[in-house]
Length: 229
Image (cartoon, rainbow, N blue to C red; front, side, top):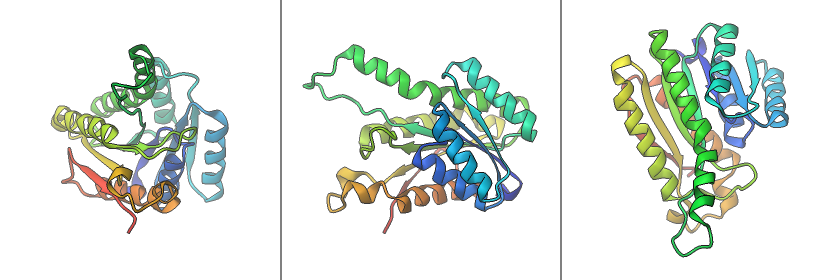
């Protein structure tokens, strides 16, 4: 896929990884559609993209209902005429330990909040690409929550890999590829402090890995683990 001729939809666009991804693909000539449910972060990123000369569009999500996300997809279609790539940011929800104070009800609420937008964007964008008979790409990225920048661990990686593999099998018949990128796990590199793992170089390494997936037509159903050496 030629990135310079593509329209890239970035979810959670105001989070650090969303910003890094939008800046990276804008620098390659892509048109960028930014969506987020935090209006202040969204508009800040939109203005920065505009200042960098990007052809971009923003859509504020008032909630994560499927109808709202469908409206966002339609608005982007009206603006650009197509969507080639979905950069779908998973704002990780960690699996609880059995001996913590977190109740089952609290975890279920967190899981619902953390996955609703991620799943809805995957579903709505895949349906759009299928209806348009468009050879698209969905890339699932693991991002830390802006309000809780703790490095993600193996439970988030397992969930993201599960979504990526399942979606790739389901969508292969429609020529829609699915890949994923996960940051180096903190618990596998005890020699690095959290500030290093959450740094801008790591975010841009994830964005470059996403670029590789977009441009490699044979990449499907697999994960890349990004690392800053």
